[in-house]
Image (cartoon, rainbow, N blue to C red; front, side):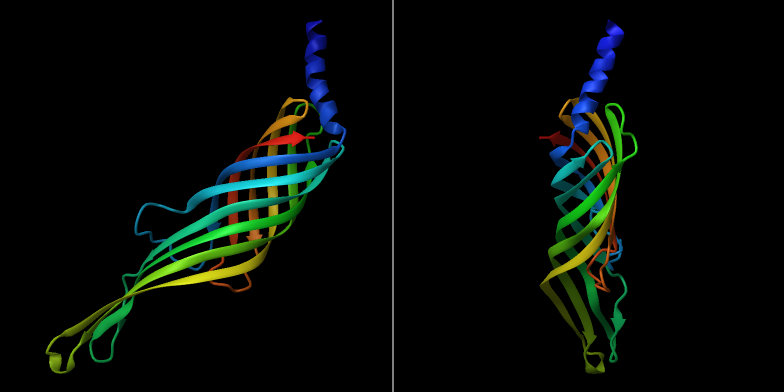
Length: 221
């Protein structure tokens, strides 16, 4: 009897999940952007790891295959300290000494996933798709110049600062991995991650890729 109940407990969630239909997912975690054209010399605490959040709708085609659309948000924070200044013809130096860049990313993607563990209450989904990354941000720059006056009679020192906004859109290719445990017939907890190949098209401000890890819930309706 106990063995029968155990089999029933395992089989019911799997059977309910295998019926197909629409589901939703909610996930949160951390992300890391790579290759954005700014140096990694930080003026403060490390800021490379940033929060990540996403939500999506998908359709189950039986136990093995599902496809869906999702929205995600993350950001990128960079600080760049420049210790090398350019020499001026008449003596002295000038250049940018500090840059602070903050970029917010809104992503939209379509993807398909394949379950390599279709039996039981544990599933492992591998996925791929296509999407677009919409970026909004600002870069604050501080520059200095130390110019020697003619005849060496003194120095002219200037400190400047400017704030420039940047907006762009870039396509990306996502690869995903999701390990899921169904603790109720229609509900599963997920531990996942992914990697985005960003097709930046030569944009210096755009990252070349993004990696992320998430923890979330999936609900079959």
